[in-house]
Length: 313
Image (tube, rainbow, N blue to C red; front, side, top):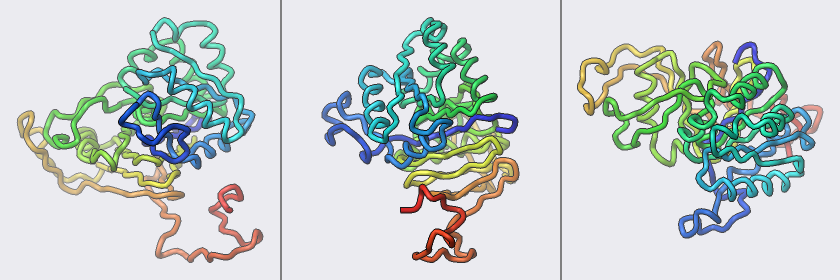
């Protein structure tokens, strides 16, 4: 993230809070698109260049039901007073070269990549003019790439596209390919806690210990800024898997399909407002038991400096 001006907001997936759809998700998936908690969407708007006036484009490429996903996101953003929102339906590679689509991307302050299939996302957009403009804007402008689920998984230079949770610590069970490359040296997994995917991240990191594994729970995200600072947002957990201190493994000795052993793998758990520095690899727990406690009642002149006015009720 060094030498870039943009911000990355990656989100683990969907929950019921903030949804404009019905509760019975399994009965009619097309009409029951659950969204992450509205606090994350508020943060996207607040971090954007022009706040509620920012131009936001929803990218539904990863979804198999894009015509239903897009309008739901417009409703959600409009509920939060962001009304300059549109949907870019890019369902074929040739559409990622369309002049009108490219101009809308150039004018966007925020792009929001929805969930679905991350391999669909990268196979349609990867290497197109759309992808080139996206990377250029992210590097050189005050611009936000936000992605949930598949949109988050595809943000890094390498991404997981396949691997069962139950068999993920068997050699060869996790499949990795190239992502959209907005951020290097991390790999992102989503729906992390709910779907028990920690083994997938362990195997990914042991194969390349320089890569930091990021596991995003549902209703949870990370705000990553140009200085390499990551802040946990949302109500759930972020799991970080750091392989730099690994002492030993049997990865190269066992056959495909056999269990993997790892000695001294480091795991961090982040919750709301905790931060992690990608440059120093240091984590700060906001409400650490070793720090001075924040009193429940404070006036504006003595408020916790780590909490912005917008975060205080």
